[in-house]
Structures are given as structure tokens and as C-alpha cells.
Length: 356
Image 1 (cartoon, one colour):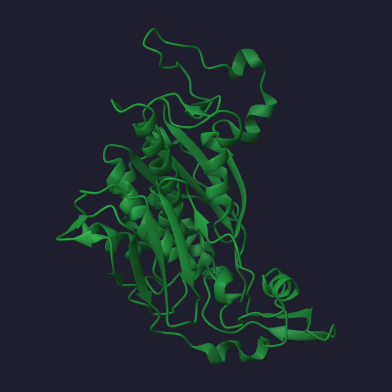
Image 2 (tube, helix red, strand yellow; image 1 turned 90 degrees about the horizontal axis):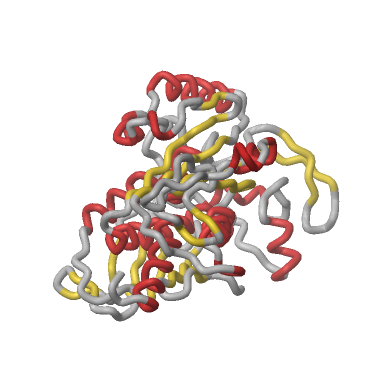
């Protein structure tokens, strides 16, 4: 299986399955001499871990990270950083009923067709549990980036939207509720919606908005390695993501050029920011903002028609512990992937110009 690594200079390779002994990763290219804040790393994992509230999966995992290499006396050595997160609360028997059955809208069928085998226990490698390793690497990337602020939040659940622009939000309130929406009134509506959907044995999707602030001018490469292209790839690599837009996004298609152009100020900043902080694939110093669409979780607690490995039509009913909405737990994952992209380009920029 290829495709287990992300990044060029700051590179993460992940390993492990949802119901295996452990998951983990190897980070290559982290600069030497970085003093790590281990509490901050664990806090990021705690934001993503299952069982943290009554609107997410009730799988109970401590998600404690153990570092194996690349760190000495609290500082990075410049060598590969290896780490593991042990799985402690697997219930593999919950998946015995799908050993030979393909769940609709899951990776079961495609994995089996491509590899001739699959780990049906929680989806194996296709499980979103893999993203915990990304969060560890992203937490380290954030510490490389220092002054750059990365804030993601839930901006919609189903047909409930946070209508306020991000400039009017207090990001410190994002963690004040279980759905991670920085407007408590809207958050309560979202939570009520998720609980109602869960009672129906169903799931629901939503969107995450992410804002990157204090990004310096010059990150990103023209043509194939544009900054927004790499951000798009990063977000679309996250389980359940169905869409990515930055800046004015699809709404910009309704505007005229005279309305959409970001006019300059004398200092190089712009009066508006419909470009979303990126022009020509390169950061321009303005806020970078984007939105990520997450589909409803595919496993539902209802009967569904499907097929088995023999090509027979069968009926199945979802079992196990699953999120009725992945969006609240996706917030730290979106932030982590954004941090990985920025760290990679920041290190490249340092190579290009030592005075950055």
C-alpha cells in the first residue's frame, strides 16, 4: 500500500490500524533544537480523542502518545521522530457481522477489490483513527510555526449555520462547548440537532472553517505546488471530507471582477480579502481562510441493503460505536493538516532565504 506519507521537508509517515496493537508515525525533517511542549501535544490529542462527550463515539481511548526517538532532554535532535499511540479499547466483535459484507459508502469494497484483502475491524487502515497520528505531527508543526495562529471551528451542522464572519468571532470560545462552535447560541442548536439525529439511528454532516493568521508573505510555490493546492490536498486526505474551498470560494463565481478584486493599500496589504490570503499560489500576508465539507458518517444504526463478497444482495444493520457527526472531533485534525502544510513551506522558505 502506497500513499502513507505527507509532506516534502517536514514529512509524516503514519502506520497502524483501528483495531491493531497501536497506531503511530515517523516525522522526518523536523529541525534540531526545538524545545517541545509535550502537554500541548497531548492536549491536541485530547481534543480529537473519542469518548469526550455525549455527541461523539463512546469508544474510550486515552490516546496517550509515546515518543520513541528523535528527542533528547526535551529537545528535537534533527533525527526522525518516532511515536506510537496504543489502542486499548477495541471491540472487534462489533464488526464480525461485516466480515464478508460491504458497508455502503465505506472503503470496504474498494479495499477488497484493490488489495484482495481487508481488515474489516473498524475499517482497519481506512479508519479515521489514523488521524490521531496526524494530530501529533501537527502539534509539533504548530510549535515550529510559533507566531502563526491556526484556528478551526464548526461552522455548520446539517442546515444549521454560523452566519457570523470569522472576524466577529472569539476563537477562545471554540472549546467552550462540545460541538466546538464559537457562538454558544448556535452551538446549542447544533448539539440538539446531533442528538436528535443520533436517536433516529442516523448521522449528519457539516462544515469546518479554518483561519490562518500571521502567515508571512511568500509561502507556496507557483504552478503545481501552490499553497492553496497543498491545503486542498491536505484537507481532502482527511476521512469523510467531500469538499474544500478557500477565500471567496464558490460564492466568488457570482461576482464581477470589479467586485472581486482585492485592491492594494500602500503597504502591500489589501482592502478586502476575497483571495483568501493567497495569490498566484503564494501567501500575501493577509488571513488565509478556508472551509471543509464533511459528509455524514457512513455507518448508521438502520437496516440497509448491500452486497457481500460473493456478490449477493444482503441486508445489514450498523453496530458498534460511531460518531453521529464527525465535525466536532475533526477540528484538531483540520488544524493539524494546515500546520503540516505551513511547516513544510516555511522550512522550504528558510532554505530559499536564510533571512526569513
